[in-house]
Each structure stands twice: as C-alpha cells, then as structure tokens.
Image (cartoon, rainbow, N blue to C red; front, side):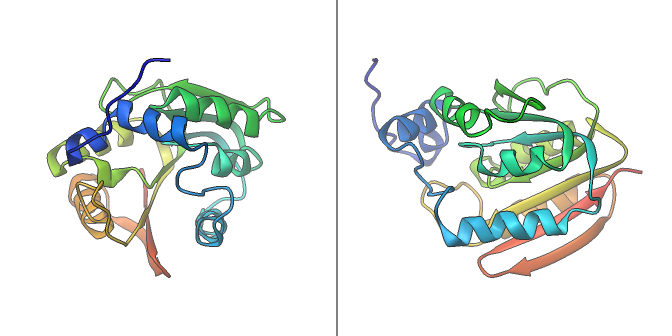
Length: 199
C-alpha cells in the first residue's frame, strides 16, 4: 500500500487523495452509520423529498452508502459516486442487497455522468469547493436533470478547518447559480435543506 502524506492545507484536505487516506485510516471517519445526528439528517432528507418514488437518482459523495441504501428503496435506479476507492468498496458492501444501485469512482470536477436524473441529492459535499468551482459544478448537475427533476442540497452548518465554504455559503452559491427559484427551504438542528425543481 502506498503511504500518503497527511494534508496540510485546506486545498489538499479536500483532494481525492486526502479522502482516500481518511477512509483507509477509519472505515467511517464521520460516523455516518452510527451518529444520531447523521441518521436524523438522513430521515429528514428522505421526508423532504417531493415524491414517494423516483425513476433515476444521482448521489455524488455517497461516502459509505448509508443514505444510498435508503435511496435505493425509493428509486428504480441509483448512481452513487465517490472519490475514495475505499469508501466505494464499503458502500458496495452496505448496498449489496440492492441490484438497482450502481457505484462509480468520480470527481465532481470532472465530466459529469450521463443523465438524465429525476433526483439529485447533493449532500455534505458543496463546502469542499471554492465558490466559482461550486457554481460551475452546480450548473453541470442541473443540466443532468430531467424536466420536473428535483435537486436537493443538504449541508451541515458547523465549522470545519477542512471546509472551503460554510454550509450557508454553499446554499447561497447554489441559489445564485441555479437557473430556477428555490421551491423549498428549511433549517434543522445543525443543518439546512434546500430544493430546486427543473422546469
């Protein structure tokens, strides 16, 4: 196994190599599978969705697949992506019972996956990008939505030295970048959710 240097700057802390290092050192570095806060965030996110059923969903930054497995119960197909091979491996194990989930190693800064999707869940990933880059990523994601498709953003409102932007800044950039008005917005204990619907 190749040794990796521990990241020393915010930019390097947000790199694919840094995320891979985190997942090699700790299979669940943010306690997504066990934290009461995270599990509640998933519950709220799923309740927030406009429809009981979706045809095709995209979940970038799926981590170890906790939310992915729950999206699989609401969607005919789910594409879930991560920048860390170790995270992808664990997510595949977590979703082994779901034949409608496909995983891919993918960086949001690269070319987007093939759409269309009628649901994109953009959770806990936006604050790892500078404002201009995030705006560009958001524009690319919206282009993947089918007419009537739903874009849901969910971000923590705490502070982290690894984050380039605060959660509120992420949602401000999204609101300024997306070519349609917000349809829903809510703040919960520690996080916020906003959604947009493609015309």
